[in-house]
Every structure is written in C-alpha cells, then in structure tokens.
Amino acid sequence: MTTNKQINWRKKAHDIIYEADTPAGKLFDIILLILILLSIAFVMLESIETLNNKYHDFFNYAEWTITILFSLEYIARVITIKNKKSYIFSFFGIIDFLSTIPKYLSFFLVGAHALVALRAIRLLRIFRVLKLARFVGESENLFKALKASRTKILVFLLAVLSIAVILGSLMYLIEVKQDSGFDSIPRSVYWAIVTLTTVGYGDIAPVTPFGQFIASIIMILGYAIIAIPTGIVSVEYNKHKNIDTNTQSCPHCVATDHHDDAEFCYNCGEKLN
Image (cartoon, rainbow, N blue to C red; front, top):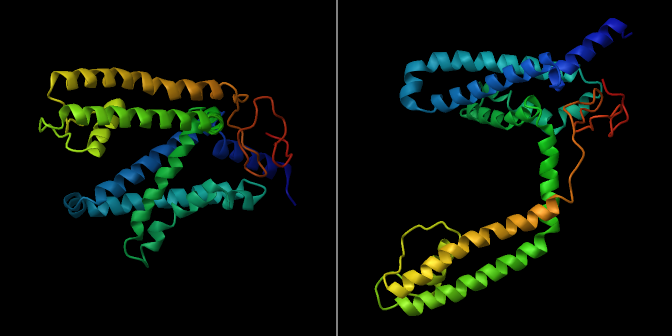
C-alpha cells in the first residue's frame, strides 16, 4: 500500500527531475547538462589519438562515472512517474536509454562507445532549464506559418529563378568573349544565383564595365529579395501565435507544454502538481 509519505517523496522527486520551475529542478537540470557536455567532450577528445594515448585511463574512469550517474537518473525518472511506459517509450525516454547503454555495450561490441554522442540530443532539455519551453511551441507556430505560406514562397522562388536565368543569360552575352568564366549560360546562371543570394564565391567575376554595372544591380537586388520571404512568413507567423506555456510536466504521462493557468493535464486529465 502506498503511504502519504511515499506519495510526497515521489511528488517532490518528480518536480525536481521533470520540471524546471523550482530552484531544485533548475539545479538538477543544470548539473545534468554539465554532465552531458563533459561526456560529449570526453568522447570527442578520446577520438584524438595523442590525447587518448596519454589520458586513456582518465577518459575511461570519467565516462564510467558519468554513465553510472545517467543510469541512476534514468531509473529515477522511471520510478517517479505513474505511467512508466509513457516515459520509457517517449522520445526523451528512448534517447535517455540509448545514451546510457553504449558504455555497457563496449564490453561486447567494439566501437559502441562512440554512440555516447547520442547524448547531444539530450541538450534539448536546456529549453526547460532556461524557461524557453514556450519557444518549442513557437517552433510549431513557425512550421504552421511556413506551411501556410508555401504557395507564396513557391511563386516567389520561381520568380527569383526566372530573374536568375534572364540575368545569367544577359551576363553570358556581355562576358562570353572576355575569358572571365562566363563560358556557358548554365555557368552564368549559376553566377547570377550566387550573386543574388549574396554568397559571392568569387570563382567567376565580370571584367567589362557594363558587366560590372549589371553585377552591381544584381547585388543590390539580392538584399531586397532576401527580405521578401521573411515578410511573407512573418505575416503568417503572427496568425499562429499560441498562449505561453510553462515547464510543468504531467506526473502521470510526462506531457509538457501546459498553459500557465492549467490545473489538469491536457493529454490524460491528471491533476498537475
């Protein structure tokens, strides 16, 4: 039978492990992020032969220490959640598991230790630590805005491609006899695209005064072209704004992104802590 003391312990542990709205929760996630960064750094440094030959034992002991800590963290996450499958088979649950087992697998599989790099994905938790969970929701708004403006953007890209073909063909006619790299229309169109996008590799450049004049116009036109899709997406983006969310995690199903005034989980109906 579960006692009130056990329930309170589980609730406090859940708040620390899964949320970042409390000092203890923030500290836990900051320590976790530091360990992840150290682990990734050790794996990268270990791949350098000279460093590995000199500090192999240090890297090995450090990685085992971090692996054991991550194993304890994974077990704690499973214990403190009511619906354990919801975490175990969630995105972060799978990542947490996969980023923990490589060191153990290194006993049986050569090279499996390199899979520790999967821990980089866990750095996504920094969104919770910095109370930027709302920006995860904002990324969904951005996706909706891009989807809603896809037709306008497609028309715009076709227009830009047409301009590049016209200007590239024009530059070919102007520069073809100057041995300046405009030896074919496709190559000239390539130059026009590179110039319009303000990349400017410099592998092809006009040498005639008229060609340089046209190139100057294309460069200026490129800045104006860059601003257009930004405006299109911005208009659609303002239509898809969501209510701000906090870092609260459901103690039953681990669902996140709840509204600031939410009392119950939107996914399973469990009362939030």
